[in-house]
Image 1 (tube, rainbow, N blue to C red):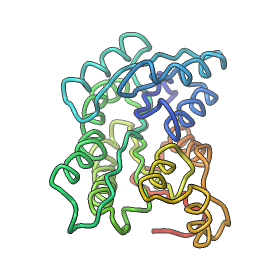
Image 2: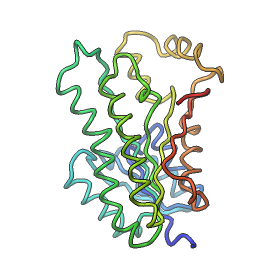
Image 3: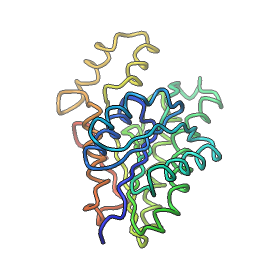
Amino acid sequence: MSEPSRVALVTGAARGIGAAIAERLARDGCDVAVMDLQTQACADTVQRIQALGRRAMAVAVDVSDETSVQAAVATAEAALGPPAVLVNNAGVLREKTLAKMTLDDWQVVQDVNLRGAFLMCRAVQPAMRREGHGRIVNLASIAALGAYGQANYAAAKAGLIGLTKTLALEMGKSGITANVVAPGFVVTPMTTAVAERLGVTFEAMVADIVRDIPAGRPGQPEDIANAVSFFADARSGFVSGQVLFVAGGPRG
């Protein structure tokens, strides 16, 4: 069956990994709804996609809020058409050991990283079922295997893997696949901010982490975008419920 639409929705797409994914999907032939908390932050990503000759629009969304998600998906579909691809990339970190972690630290990470993906998947599935085609790609992390000082983040990302595998079971007969890309350490504004919070230079943090990466280098946003591109492709219809660790070495 030919793909009826090549409209992609990418959350957390204003910068970093999300922006790289949005641009890669545009290069693959998608029109892209660039989704983030504020439309102004999406301007550069939108401009780069439009320069590639694809349609792009900035859509404001708080993925943790049901009403915001429903409105954002409706806005994107009305302007671009039914979504063929959903990439749930939006995420936040609140690093603390369990003894120091507050309930708010726990809850905000669950709300954005896990609840947000659930809400977005639920919002796009009627259109995907109607079209008989869909590609859902959720961004987890090697933290799903356990990460010191990140109990909240690890739990959310592990939950995202379980959610994705269940969606693959439930939605497969409708022509919808659901897969996970789980990055290792990637150079982004988020990881730069981690170094600042730890009180170390980013260069020192990278050097320490790279010692444990077999590939001998940190990941770049484009590494993750390339993996997402595979799962999002119309030709990947027999690949579903899978987790691809993009971490410079064997994981999982």
